[in-house]
Each structure stands twice: as C-alpha cells, then as structure tokens.
Image 1 (cartoon, rainbow, N blue to C red):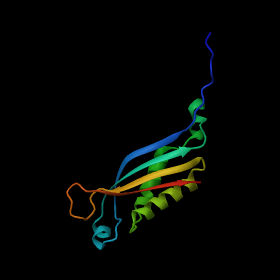
Image 2 (tube, helix red, strand yellow):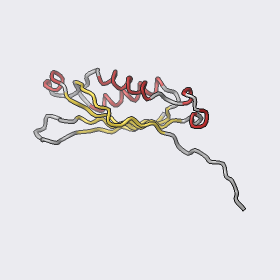
Image 3 (cartoon, helix red, strand yellow):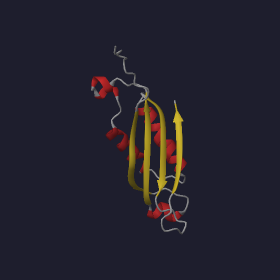
Image 4 (spheres, rainbow, N blue to C red):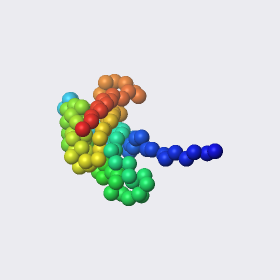
Length: 128
C-alpha cells in the first residue's frame, strides 16, 4: 500500500550570483579616483514560501529590484567593502520585510596589491 505524504518546503532562498559592477571603493586615493570592478554574490533567505504554490509575485522578492538596490548602493563610494555590504544588507531588510537572512560576498576583482590574478573579498551574514 502506498502512503502519500504532504511535501513540506523547508527553506527558500533567492540568489543573485556574479553581479559585476564598476565602483569607487577603497582606502587609497587612486582607488576612489579611478575605480575598479567588483563582483557581488547574494543569498536571500525568504520567510514566506507561498509563491511556490500560488505563482504570485506578491509572495516573493523581485530579483530585478534587488539588483537595482545593489547597483544603487555600489554607486556610493566607501573605504571598506564591509561598509558597502552593511549598507546593502540594511537597505534590503528595509525594502523587503520577508527576507529573514542575507549572505553577501563583495569581491574587489583587482585590488592594488601587485598580483595578476588576485582578488580580495569580504562576506557578511545578517539575520533579522
């Protein structure tokens, strides 16, 4: 005899990977004057799973809106990558109440440290 069990969604995340933006973050004067390329990866843990069954955008977070928010925050120069991540997290929590947790990694693709293929990154994780 076959028993049917109701499926239960245990987690729901939205990820935006490899967002590549040009910005003016850094401690050195040259970094803020010239700028550099950065790569951002985000993972948003969402509290409401209803969109999986309803197919309604109201139960989720628009990744297009998340991208625009990240792009806007990246356009404000900061000395530290940690500060940029903190600003992005704060803005995401403010705009989207259903986000429970955010993991974000911000990587400077070519920091001024003399290496050909060197990158430097910070990762922040925050919960409500």
